[in-house]
Length: 287
Ligand code: GLU
Image (cartoon, rainbow, N blue to C red; front, side, top):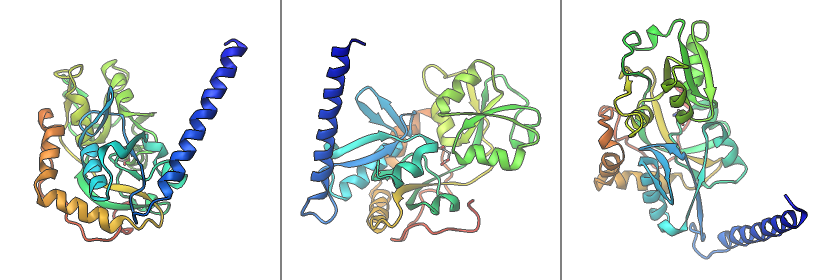
């Protein structure tokens, strides 16, 4: 890069920083008790049906619930600033103030509850396996002996494999599940493991359709919470918004619009979750 270009880049960066500082300030200085000018919402960018960046659009069930909740908190769609929140970065992004809320297939766990709060859950999924269409030997976690598996750093899915199957399974960890699917398609791993609803979305994209299959034998319970900074006072309002979304039928509509085409059927015993107006508390069963 020429020195002129370097200089120009620096000026642009400084201007951008100044602009975002102004935004951040104006976000605080508001008469409204909750709503500022913008709300920064962390989502996944590469999980079709859940959180997906499609050009300028952001699609998927997580984004639909996020929009609904944001609206109930007093924010219109044009006040939402979407921020990519990979699995391994979520707690840090909330603690550092990089985002205000996270809707990113984010399971409520006791470990995470030590550093962040959760409203919700707004959906309950289960860990499952995605394999190549012609794979006939993996029917569930019992057949993982000697297999190569891919999952994502910082996820409950990788942790489960490390805790329960470490001696038998070769676990490859990537930054995202879409990277895992590339490895599966290339025959570099035997299976991808994470939540069933995520795998259903990835397996039904145009590129993967007919190539991959969801095993359909879940072996964990994943309660998707709304990640919040520790000490947040928004849990009650968010839970009320989620309850309203369920009661008005918008929850079901959003789910159908987002993952209906993949053929995914959610667990009707566990969904939709019923909420009171407090934050999720640590429980004995979720690590
Ligand atoms: N729900 C699991 C988790 O929060 C797996 C999906 C993900 O990594 O986002 O870790």
